Amino acid sequence: MTTVNIHEAKTHLSRLLERVEAGEQITIARAGKPVADLVPHARVDLVFGALADRIDYDSDHFDDTDPTLNDLFGVS
Image (cartoon, rainbow, N blue to C red; front, top):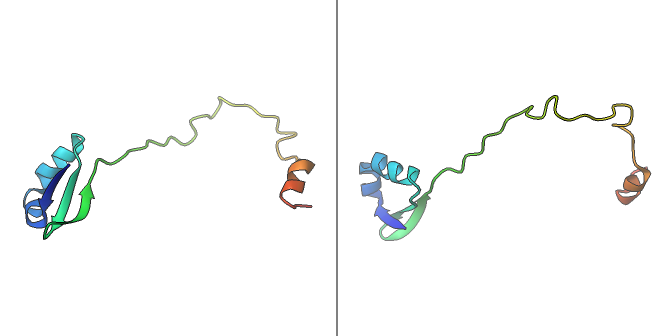
């Protein structure tokens, strides 16, 4: 892992971000003490409704309560 001081990070932020995009992790330090880490962003693509028309359920029984589960959770 590479360590750079704050002045260098401010001066070369674009270059440092290119390195981070390539997978490198960079530590930013003040007076030699680590302050922050630049790490690649872990992107998660969420797709809402991705299972629409792919799953099926019995709507007559979908909202039924289960007495055993209710007992476990203390619900009457």
